[in-house]
Image (spheres, one colour):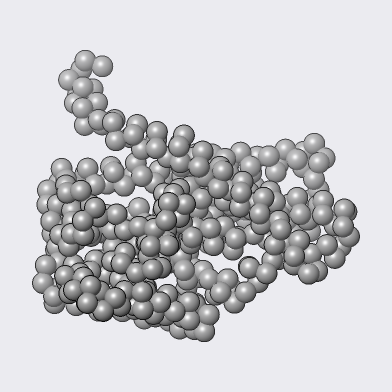
Length: 395
C-alpha cells in the first residue's frame, strides 16, 4: 500500500502496521496486568503505573477515525452509516462476553447454594445490596452506558468500560465532523486547548489516570481527540518526513525516541504527572505512524499484525481467564506446593504461559466466530427498510 496523507473511508486506506502491532502488545500487557498472582512481569513499576497505557487505545482510535473519515462525514446518512459501522465493530463480542459474565455471576450463586463455596467475611454476592453485578448494571452494560457516571463501580466484564465510553465518544466526533469540522491550523489549536483544559480539570479531581466508571468518558475524550491532532500532524509532516528518511535514515532514531518517551513517562512520572499523557501519546503515535524504521518493521511482522487484528478479542475475553487461573492458583497450588509456592515468582511467571496461550486461542476463536460474523450480520441488517415495511402495514 502506498502512503497517502489524504486517506479516507472511500479510498483504500494505508495500513498502519506498527500501530496495529502495538495495539496487540498493549492488549497482552493488559491481560497480564489483570492477573491476580505475582510474577516478575506484573510486579515491575511499568505495570504498577501501567493503567495510563489504556489511553493509547483511545489515541489510536481518534487517529484512525479522523484519518479515515475526514471529509466523508458530511450528511446525516453518512453519519448513521458511521455509527452503524462502529456499533458493528464493538458490540458483538461485548454482548457475548456480557452474557458470559452474567452466567458467571449466577454460577457463583449456584456454587454457594449447593455448598461448593462458602461466603467469606465481607463478600457480597451478585444481585445483593451493594453488589456490582445487579440487574441495573446489567442493563447499563447492555446499553453501553455502564461507565457514563451511572455507577460507583465496574461490573460484569470489567474491561468493557472502555467500549462504553468510546462508543459515546463516536457521537461527539460525529457531531464535530458534521457541524464543526476542523480544517485550519487554528481549529486544531482550539482542540488542543480543550484537551489541555479537560486534563487539567481531571487532574484536580483524581490522583492519577486510573479511573473509569465515573469520569471515564472525559478520559476517553482527551485521548481520542489527541489522536485527531496526531492525524492532522501526520498529514502535514508525512511529505517532509519521507524526504528526511530517504536522505538520513533517521526513522529508527525517531522511533527509539518515541518509545523511550512513552516508557520513561510511565515509569518515572506517576500520580498527577500522568495527566500529561496527551503530549507523550502524541509523540509516540506520530513517531510510529510512518512505518519506516526498524522498530516499525518488527512491529509489522506477520505474528504481531495478527495479534493486532485479534487485540479487541484479547482485551474482551481475558478477564474471565484471569479469574479462573487466579482461583485455581489460590485453591490448588498451595495444596500441591505449599503456601510459599510462588515465593520466587518463577512459578507465577510459568503460569502466565498457559494463561496467555488460552487467552490467545480463545481470542482467535472469538474473532473468527463472534466478531467477524456479528459485524457482517449487523452491517447487512437494514433497519430503515424494516421500519418502512412495518409502517406500510405489510408485516
